[in-house]
Each structure stands twice: as structure tokens, then as C-alpha cells.
Image 1: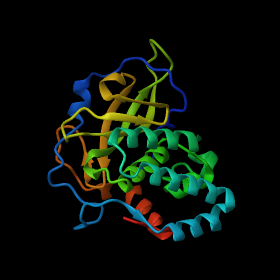
Image 2: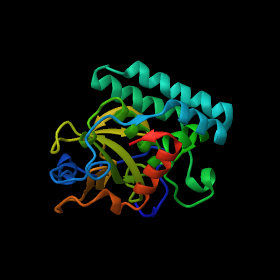
Image 3: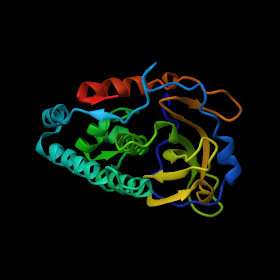
Length: 241
């Protein structure tokens, strides 16, 4: 997203808003999408652990390195585990490790997409930062990238009868391109099918292969202006997309 029109949700309080059909309309075929880099083969997302540790120590000191090591422990423990266990473990890890806070408070700017290293170093972030950490964790564990989507939603807040909604982002796991996604959300450790998240109304979704909007063909992910910048900064830190 090129900027946000509201802060991410920081507290639950939802009323039903959308049916399963609405989520399926937001899911279109992945055929013809882009790879993480043009022409890059589909593979697990790798990193240079020593470079990451050096980058973390330089920017965030020993507390950051300790948080990074906890992430490494998670990834080693989940390697080869059943998919459901990986999804649960990754969702719970990032929800535990990162304190919900908005970008002006954490970064002193209106909108900053933090790398996983930055989120662990600060131990704070907003909804996009949770999703970024979960997305790249699951890619590293071997989950197919085409099954994961950043989903931009409007989240209803304020309880029953409220008409207020705010911008929010969650991670969706799609078993097939047209499947109802499982929702991994910074608001809860419970992973629910989208039809059971009546507080969330999907607007569009994207991953490294493209942007998906109901009724339109996928378009390049590079149109999300912060996406290429995020990948470039991750490569500088020691990630290898």
C-alpha cells in the first residue's frame, strides 16, 4: 500500500461484516503472476545467519540478537513439521515477540514496512510488520509462496452496531488459489477460516507474484511501492530472496 488511511487495529471488538463469498471474490487465479524476482524459481526464502546477526548487533545490540536467536530456534524446531503446526507456531511466535504499536511511535514516520530483523530488533510493530514476519518465516520453512497472501482489509471495531472500520492487514493461507483462506492475525493466536472472521472485509490481496483485486487480472507486486524497498533492505541485512 502506498500509505495508510487509518491505523492498524490494536484491539478486538468486531461484528459480522462479510460472508465467505466475499472472501472468495477477493481470490483470483495466480496464473501469470510474478515471481519474487522476475524469472526467479520458486524456492524457500533463505538468509545468511551470520550477516543477519551482525546487522542486528550493529543496529539493535545484544537484546536484538537474542530476539533473532529465538527466531532461529523457532525455524529449526518447525523445519519438517506438519503444515498446520508450522502455521500455528509462526502465528503465535510473532504475536508474542512483537508489541502492537503504530509507525509514528516506533519509527517516527507515517508508514514504515519493517523487515523481520527490524521488527525483532524493536520488539514492536504494526499490522503489516506482523504479516511480513510471518510471511517470510513460512517461506523459509518451505510453504509455497503462492499459498500465502498479504490481505488488506477493513476491520469493524467498536462492538455490535458500530459502523466504524479501520485499515488492517492479515496473512492468508490458501490451500488452493480459489480456497477460503485461513487467517493469521496479530489480534489473535486463533487461526480461523475467513468465513468465521465476520469483522474483516477484504479489499485486495497480494504476494510476490502479484496483486489480486476482485474482477481484475493480477498485476505486478512492484505496484505496491513499499514492496521493492522492503526486499532491497532485507537483502542488505542478509536475507536472500
